[in-house]
Length: 355
Image (tube, rainbow, N blue to C red; front, side, top):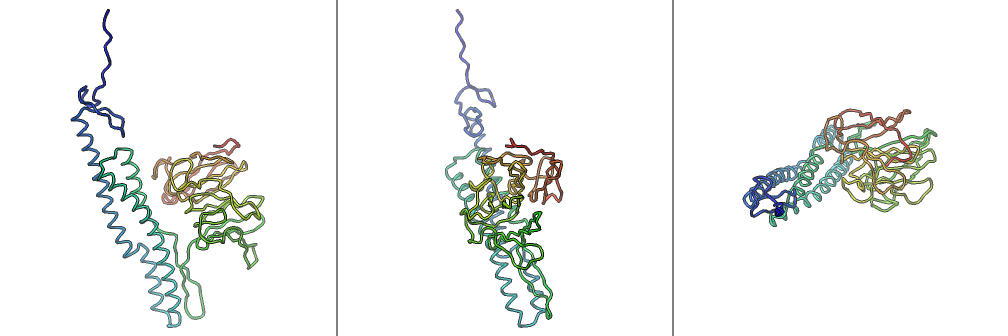
């Protein structure tokens, strides 16, 4: 009787069967020499990330000294030189608001960047990393670079007066109007949503107004608004990475998408903006920093990617900082693909089983 031949595990690179080792990152089998070479290759990739990390660290330091929005400062300075003495106090107040906003954005970037710095140092010191670590490190570094280089939502507004054009620092807001001619405005500085009836001068605070926070009655930079026929309001709570729904006259909102912290899995969002709801209560979200459109069925714990999510880019299946959303009567979804300077149209028919 012929003896059964045992199958031997061999190196995936040179087919040798001696001294084999398995890389937990890529799950490939290597002989000793090829495993050492594989580790050298991983170290070379880490070196590249560290070099880019150091370059970004220098850019971040320069950004703290001289913010990217220095042109806005110059507008303030030019106006001050042409103005009379009694309006100098207004210029100083405008500078303080602008500097605070810029510093707040920089601090937020620094916090995430410090976490990446620690991960890179531990990976280098402990030599305990593989491909599954390098890929997210690269993505985090690219995302941080985009955040510091992309233009912020700050503008200078001028209003005519009898003496000079008085300036103020203005943070751009989002608006929506329902069929009854109520205008809804999100105030990301005061973390509240206000409502006006067209033609009236006084406003009503509809939701929020309780300071910045992540409670169910609070916001952290509210942006896009969707108002339903029953006066329910869905709002993108951008820096809390969630979509909140407020039923009319409610004292607290309901999380209808996200709310699990920032991330790119199907349970989380990253700085969402555009939001719209179909007749079946399916919530469509422009997941801005994840460059994708996600929809959440009623009471679902996870969302489903409608389009994008293939990294940022300008190809047909890619988005780059998607913002506003809108449906037409045929069920087509329109997306403002902001940094690609285009409007994308997707053939989507909402239905009760959307998931």
